[in-house]
Amino acid sequence: GENVEQHPSTLSVQEGDSAVIKCTYSDSASNYFPWYKQELGKRPQLIIDIRSNVGEKKDQRIAVTLNKTAKHFSLHITETQPEDSAVYFCAASFPGKSTFGDGTTLTVKP
Amino acid sequence: GAVVSQHPSWVICKSGTSVKIECRSLDFQATTMFWYRQFPKQSLMLMATSNEGSKATYEQGVEKDKFLINHASLTLSTLTVTSAHPEDSSFYICSALLQGRQETQYFGPGTRLLVL
Image (tube, rainbow over all chains, first blue to last red; front, side):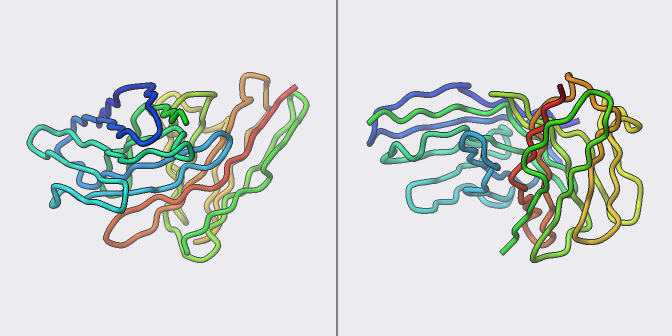
């Protein structure tokens, strides 16, 4: 089955700096890669996603890149703000199933 | 759009009782829903995939007689934790699959279960 590895497990940055979270996956059948943000005690919320036929996607301060050949994808957050502090999960999906990474706890220090 | 609700949000029960958790897609139809379990500071552990009108598919290691799943309509899936014990205490989250081009899962707010 699919195996998703996510790094780092914790990340602390200063407000205004950039944050990068990386994931690798094993199953070449995966073709959809969402990123979720989960604040403490709340539901995971989709923040950005990318399909396998696209190499990069950007939405304001958030961007995701995908290297299908190397089977890795990354989340980039620029100009971080304290409200970006949360746990971020990547996932590798094919129709009907998603496999999640273990999560990255991002702390943005004011 | 794509709102998923869960009920109850909190439940405390005595050991040995059964607890039913409902997951509803409020503004779309979901032929597929997922049930996850999440321990503190850990990732989402998929328990089972719930398909409307058919039996749920359980992940390895998840007891289907312990965690009963029913997906009787296109907007409702239920998870029943039978004869709950303290080790079943956890955060249970459902998600509903939004069919279409992007196969996006939308999550419910979760149910926190505490078994005394």
